[in-house]
Length: 59
Image 1 (cartoon, helix red, strand yellow):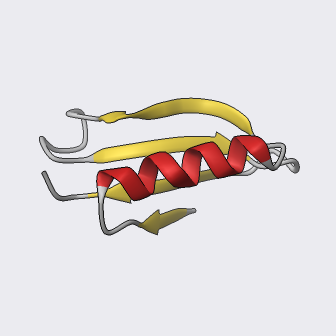
Image 2 (cartoon, rainbow, N blue to C red; image 1 turned 135 degrees about the horizontal axis):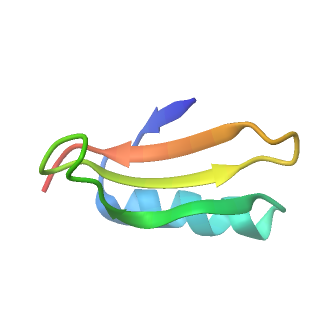
């Protein structure tokens, strides 16, 4: 499941808050050019093992 974030900082905040709440890191926030040049995402696994992501499509 992906959540749209308004800024790259919001992606970083989502990722940090998820880790603090017990999620496991999948991909630390970064540009993911395999999706498109401005795709900035941070990925975690929640306690049930579900993949969660916050993504910003802006530069």
